[in-house]
Amino acid sequence: MSRSPKDRSEMSWVDAELEDSFDEELEMEIDDERIARELQNITDSKHKSTLARRTYFRELLRLQAELVKLQDWVIDTNYKLLVIFEGRDSAGKGGVIKRIMQRLNPRVCRTVALPAPSEREKTQWYFQRYTPHLPAGGEIVLFDRSWYNRAGVERVMEFATPEQVDQFFHDVPEFERMLDRSGIKLIKYWFSITDQEQQLRFLMRIHDPLKQWKLSPMDLQSRVRWEEYTKVKEDMLNRTNIPEAPWYIVEGNDKKRARLNCIHHLLEQVPYEEVPHEVATLPERVSNLDYERAVLPKNLYVPDVY
Image 1 (spheres, helix red, strand yellow):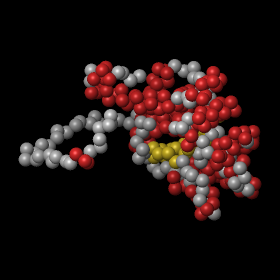
Image 2 (cartoon, helix red, strand yellow):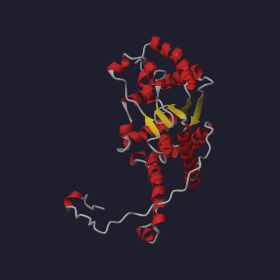
Image 3 (cartoon, one colour):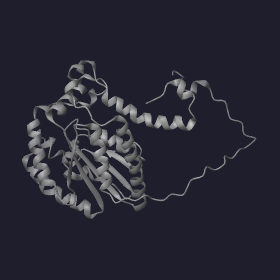
Image 4 (cartoon, rainbow, N blue to C red):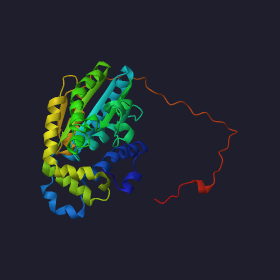
């Protein structure tokens, strides 16, 4: 937890920098737990994590340190890693993606979250709009939803014809085997939550101004069609669970445990090793005694409001 301003003034610069780094995760955690006043009466039925906050933070930071080692190894070996995150709306996919990305280099590890296809894209080979985002050597790509939209929302909402869905199921195993043969390591996660948990998370989004943008008309329809989504999910997992790219189910009712379990499992799927680095030394700054720093106009500066 953050210290009072008085305490922080007595901290060393190094300690203050480290605390700010930890506060970034704490801010995200507080946002996750912030509950609108209108929902206070249902919080007793809301799933609460049995994982102590101190334990959660300690393990998260340890796993994130391992993710940095994984990143270094991916760069060093020119490895190509692709991770797909699927699941019901509000199941926690975005939360775990944030924690994976949080300490990594965005030039090495990036997230892909594609919008609905354009009219032009609808006429293309189905996988075509996804292929430009596949990882090159030395890259990690996280798909926040993927080509499995066709097996889920497009199927339930009838955006795809039965013939298109059948063609997808015929093509996707071979497509993923092609990715495997090309040297791309594909890992697929399905985040699972209960009916009641999704209902409560949707209610939080409805009543929380900072989270209302997360709730789309498609999300609301997913509540109406819960059982349809369950049926197509089971069919999808059964028909696309291949040895080259198996599915892994993450129990998502407990957000903290889901994040830790998923990251821990992800690390186990890649045979990474720690890459040795030369110890960096900070060079001396070159000083020019004839140089005088210019005084810039005050109107160029952002006002000190805080």
